[in-house]
Amino acid sequence: MSETAEAQQEETANAESVLTVLIAGLMNLGIAVAKLVAGVLSGSAAMVSEAAHSAADTVTEFMLYIALRNSVKPADTAHPFGYGSTAYMWAALAAAFTFVAGGLFSITHGVHSMSGEAESNFLIAYIVLAISFVLESVSFARTIVQLRDESRRWKVRPRLFLRHTPDTSLKAVFLEDLAALIGLVLAATGLLLTEITGSPFYDGGASILIGVLLLVVAVLLGHANLSLLIGRGLPPRFRLAVLTEIEAGEDIAAVQELLTLQLGPTSVLVAAKIDFRDSASGEAIEHTSRAVEARLRERFPMIRYVFLSPWGDPASGADADLSPR
Image 1 (cartoon, one colour):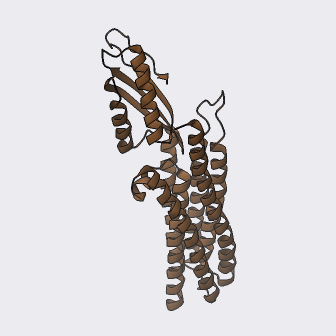
Image 2: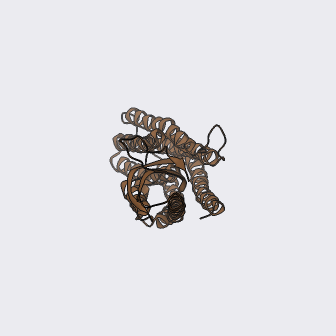
């Protein structure tokens, strides 16, 4: 695959993520305002917590948008492998400062509201919850479409792709939308039970559960992004596929060492020390190395850098440094 084709695929994948983030962000902004108005008018703690939830989601989408725009900056002398890892930094900050803040606010507000008076204006809260559910469903549907498209490119099930994907913006939007839909159900349940019993306990309890839900999402996203910031290799299944592809090369006896590194959402580095057959000439080794690199790039478009090195006799110290092909 040519570099132009690779760049086009990377640009397409990034554009899809940007569109998904923008749709989710606009939806959440409108929903946050509507929930806040409904929460103030009805006096519902769960509605105010849901407003904080949507506000946190909106800030998250803004930070993810910045991450996506910065991560596609071209490589330069100071950053020879590009800026892909900036996506993980911004996504980690989004998880830490928005979800945790929203979660702690919802829990605190819910605890304080459990001993107050029950609200009396339920209708406006129910209307806003119903509209919010529809809008969140639209955003979630868009996320599902992208998730299926991306998993189809890698020829894996969507669940497996979501678990291992380096595109943490997609994972963040998916978890946000899912948490938002669950939060709306919790808020509606709390309102209904409060309306039936006249006790604010259920409304406040729903607010606390929404806060716990936000904290769970924050932990999941924070862990995923920190793992990638530290430097994560390809998942075992894909690493094995890369290893198999290299071993299938002509004149290759064995792969002595294989290292993979996720440089960004759409960029992977592969480095390997290869034991070529004794009969292979220098010309044959060069031809095989180029052929292996071409097959890897063709089968796995996210592989942007391939470094192959002949493996010498370890006892003699003849093995060469990893060098680009």
